[in-house]
Length: 288
Ligand SMILES: NC(=O)c1ccc[n+]([C@@H]2O[C@H](COP(=O)([O-])OP(=O)(O)OC[C@H]3O[C@@H](n4cnc5c(N)ncnc54)[C@H](O)[C@@H]3O)[C@@H](O)[C@H]2O)c1
Image 1 (cartoon, rainbow, N blue to C red):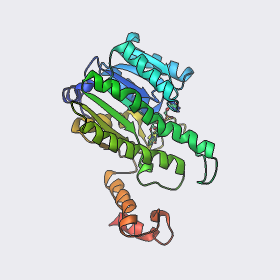
Image 2: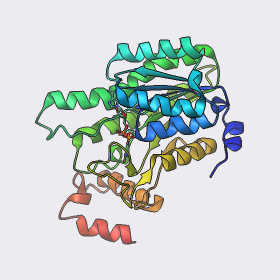
Image 3: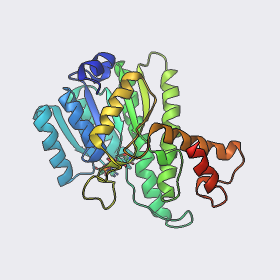
């Protein structure tokens, strides 16, 4: 495990006393980040839909960071005004923000491509537009502060290999991937900017999103493992923070991604991995 000292000497944005804003911070990966960063001495802004879970998370993080170092802000990331207000409150309370994790997300499946437009819009409003709202609200303020900063947007392997199952989720996470790639490029080319953007790509992680499970499935990582991996990746300067889990190794992920892009290069049908005519070739490719 990368030590706090190694992380903090490599990344000034994560120095003790710095401020982290985490959307979806009341549960799962976001809450694991809040606890870990609080233990490193950062001040934490927890943003999540309001209610008992946010209050409880805020109390839990306060036991680590101290009450005055935690601010909980009820925020619906799908609403630009809410996220603007979150930025205003964060800067008012702590005078600056050096890490923004646009992490809030939902996994409910609105259905087929031709069904339930409202459900599709709602999912995209949270998973995709929530990230854009975060960037719009925080980046101009972070740029004006002129300090080192980090933005970590949570994507998914489902936004890269786009497996059948929840198409709206895949679309939202493909959008987060493209948006974050472009954001990294734009920030790299912004005169005087010292802010880097990264794409967090968790594997199978046991959180509130893990449907139906009451205890951690053997194949899943914990949120804490994802955050350890994220911090080590940030120290290395990785843009793509591609987490393995207890089932999918990095070589397996590399092959799955190579096969997905190979559909275009080799002129196979879309999602050929799940097409009866190509299933055996995919299995052989994975074995090779
Ligand atoms: N768990 C996994 O296996 C996995 C894998 C890949 C990616 N992800 C992504 O990781 C991120 C975190 O999810 P998690 O697994 O920790 O799940 P989680 O359900 O434990 O946490 C997600 C949090 O987002 C909050 N949220 C939902 N809608 C919101 C809104 N409109 N405004 C503000 N907050 C909102 C929820 O209340 C919840 O606290 C999500 O973006 C998810 O898509 C998860």
